[in-house]
Amino acid sequence: MKLAASISFFAMAGCILWAVEPLNVRLGQWETSMTMATTGMPPIPQEVLDKMTPEQRAIMEQRMKGTGTPRTTVTKSCLKKEDLDKAMTFGADDKECTRTIVTSTASKQEVHIECNRGGGKQSGTIRIEASGSESVKGAVQMTMTSGGRTMNISNTFSSKWLGPVCSEKESK
Image (cartoon, rainbow, N blue to C red; front, side, top):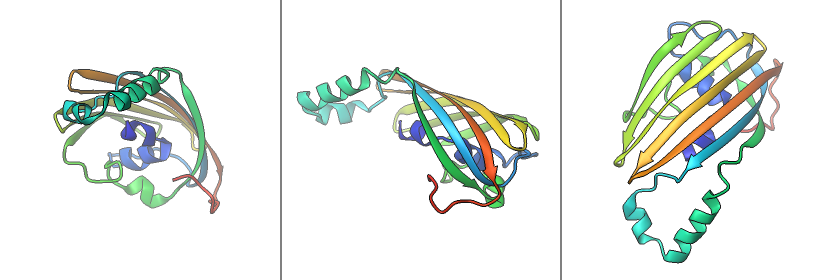
């Protein structure tokens, strides 16, 4: 779930653009509006669930009941040249994940991701489309399974360029 919550345009842009052709977008301050919805129960390993008290488990299940309701967040980020040049690692060189580039042009990126860790599996697709150098939209579809539980995560986002100078107060 942490992976899903941390995906934003700039994480994806910096990660996806290792392919043959990066997106043709302007550098500087961007604002991203992201809507995320989840369905299903988090794929928590059975050994972790077994260690929870019945009260802890009930609290977790109660909190997860409302996760299907879409939540929207707005963040500002600074896109730098080195972000566009980074390999697709989501912040770390994750050797448990494979990434397959489906499409890579100056206006569209699509990447399929498969991860296997801790007995669980994550798979999904990230799609990004730049309608111009100052406007980007996209979607992320992920499925996470472990211990007989499956969670589906659906994100959509749109980003707009605010200017060439980044503010000191930006979301990370």
